[in-house]
Length: 543
Image 1: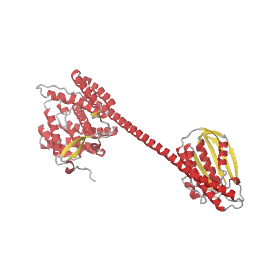
Image 2: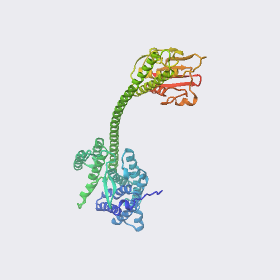
Image 3: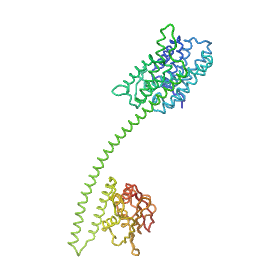
Image 4: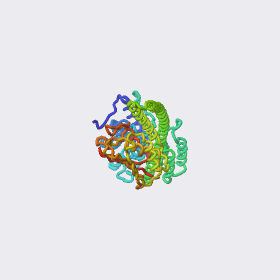
């Protein structure tokens, strides 16, 4: 894998690289035009521009930075031979390369500083650490003559320049291929930068700019520099990251660039841009802190916007689901009604046929009745599932004894019901729960216990119902001495339409509905079984 990916000429156009070189040279000429001002050494733009370009276009910008650095040293008539010029020329491309190398994984050129983490990471890896190279060159090879305070002042000024130039450019702009012409395209990078075609907080930015202009004439920057920081922090809290980085840029222009331009036409200029180390340290900290506050505010607003959008989508989805559920309920009810009506008619006809032929009772009538009953049971289970699935839990007083009696009364039609002995041991018979759901769960468990009794004459068929409270839960156990469930089937008995034995006559919905109802009540259902001996199902629900 190529460690240093390159952008092809066909991608960016043949004129891209000469244009980049021209931009670097123009920034060098600008710095050179201020050479007669004693404070102009605090403003060096080519490195800042180079950092932006290397993140936009990749490592191919580094040789351009090297060539521009040679051009700058020749322009400034740097003392020493070609060997020293060559050595000093490595400073600018080295800073640019280190910035690219340390932060190339995060692709700031296409993603920008889109969140707080990427902003802090780029400030540290893309600007702060690469800028540490500058004082090494400054201390050994510049006109500072080993003055540590002066070296530190230069390092801070370089950091401020890199920070205030690169952050807005990387955040707002992206290079895009456009034929053979280099073009910058403004994007919003997933944030709400614009409202009605204008930058959010643009009016406040204009008012803040006018305030800063007034401050620059009314107060001494060296004494009252912190006022700018206070205002910038307020802008960050109110309008977020895009506005505050532009506000910082306004402060930079007013207090670093315009004073130099104004003095450039004077014959006897004096220092206007502060050269106090404490001021630069304070301003650098202020620029970073205000930007970080703005970045956090923008991230918070972006998250809130996404949450609101997701909430609206969820509400729309819920509305559609509610409508679909309502339509499904109507469909299930309509279909079950349309099926149940003819089934009841068939059962009535069977009963009449038996009355008309009391002496002759054809066996096929029994088969028809059994099939009709099976189909009617299935329709009932489908309805139970539909109601259980849609049911909202409503707590009410439930008497367990009355409930079990009601359930067993409804199950009297099942085969062999009269041969089964029911025993109950109910403690705390009354408790609060959803009556429909607990009835659906117990009804299906008792129905299965009745259906799957063993057909043996030497055994008394028995079903036991036991309940007891414990730990804030009501436990209800239904035990039988029926067929039991064979081991291969035990892991699947709660699945929809799964039948636990080869002799099963049910639809496979009973235990599925029971488990669904118990889970709606925030309870659990457990079982133990032994094939040929019987089964024991225990429901535990909070009360």
